[in-house]
Image (tube, rainbow, N blue to C red):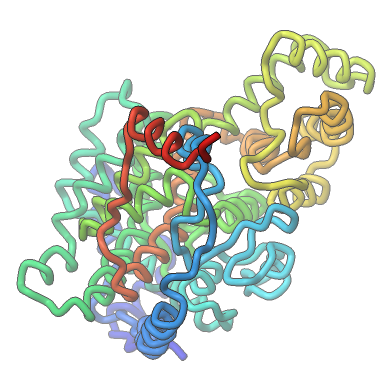
Length: 479
């Protein structure tokens, strides 16, 4: 269980609820509700402290018994093809099954929706619960989730140099550049960097990485909201946080949205995007940079630079652009035949259908189904949702007919833009920032475990084309 000692000052702040909106001094407004030292909980950390020695023994014994066991082969095409299919990383938090979709510590998305605590009156799991699950493999109680919410709220303030930096960025600077820069600048606060400089024992690295990770997760919504407000809301203040509310609620309010449905949508969005194995660009980057013992702020900043790449984080925007163009041509209530013709013309032009297919999945993305169910429950008559729903039935048979598509089914990118657009968050350039806030939970949970298990610096062997040619000739049987 989580334990916490409230000072009288904290109780008074809790009774006040949301503080008045503050000006450019985001720090002072947030710090009025922040008493990290008084509210620091060691509950989650204590659970990890109990788990980690057992996991270290488990891994050591496994390596001793099976250290030479082969788990796969590497082909030339794999090396030239982005290392697709190479089994080369250990990631504890999630596993992507081609036929079942993502499992978070063994739990499918439907199971997470059923088992993880929700906010009072809500149906969607609280993201704090999925973070607890990613770290521990255990389903948290509502009290444990509430404690994480309070911890996040009370660590959310930014140091002055970071808030000043965000307020000084030109409007022309991409939101992801701002996010990555602000996260890197937070490394002045790194407890891990200081502890490493002071000579902390390797077995204790994880404790300081944990503290940095919790701090970063707490501050990310503040950073993301400041970026949004500065770019799209005339630099109006994000206001202050309510330590009695959850992470998604406070994030939504800082963005300027107080519709309960929007908050529920944000809980859904942050939960289902939180992790997707360790081989994708953002997750692998965080692991790689962290393996050099860069602190979590720098590691996550690098991760966000990877997510900013159009092949990783731009997919949902590409879907929206394509859908918007389709609506211009076929209208809001097209027939199935009209949609089919548009899809076929897209393919004939040499383009792909955005939002369909996946590098690993071989079935409809379970995250897509979550988003679809949310839309069906809350706004089934939305024109954009209706169009996406038509595509869900029309596109797969067309792609199957081509005979070259391993996975003709829709992925989550086909649906997330619909959710955000419906509630008025229409600034597509900002969407990857939301993705980054969510993905932080998975990559930082993995980073904590990397240090807990003493993972070494990553250093794979590379070969030149000439060396590969010589190697394949040497392996070729003689005539």
